[in-house]
Image (cartoon, rainbow, N blue to C red; front, top):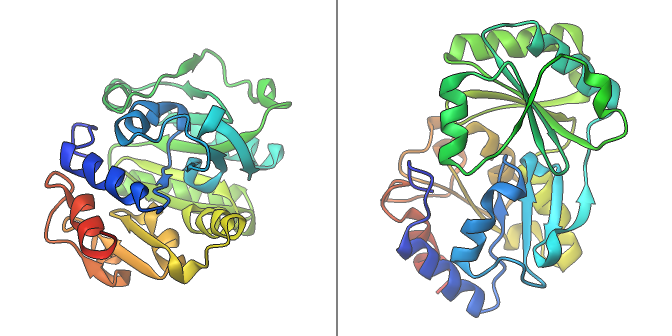
Length: 260
């Protein structure tokens, strides 16, 4: 995506050309599937049978037709509650709770809310830190928005001081979030799960990313790609680094080089 949250025309055209050849183009996002439906429309993949999406850093795998859940990797309630309580106790953090279909935010922060708007993300505000309201729902992930790297790392440490680290997968994303998923669940594990359903081996998958929550995905596939402005740890695991950055049709470069 471009910095403004849009999908470029060249990227969209390359995606359409790849799917016309029988390749599955799978959006693999930390966000909810509800927030990228317009992008799927631009790709000609919205509500299409035998086309797929991954949401919540691997928490949910869907067939695009009717947004049918195929794999649900939800957080155990008590683990999610403990993570949330640490976030809610920090008054500088906007703490997000993603259920299977909705985003709830406790203590929303103006900068974060503006960022979500550019990404087409809608949310409901939690007026109280009463986590028991989610007891009968699938909780996909809990994340906190904080303005600095040091604050995000401190939040990670605070959570891991309260919750057994073996129960969590922790990543950082978008230069603003620290994210908590169930242990063993990430963009990479979901890519492999979906590939298995489709009879596609990990070494037959291409993945492109730029940030630390993309690392498990890049490490799981046969051809990991970093965009030109990916973080150093992403570039280190990539077998190919694009000449273009995310604002210069990097996906089109990947697809034209390796698919078309």
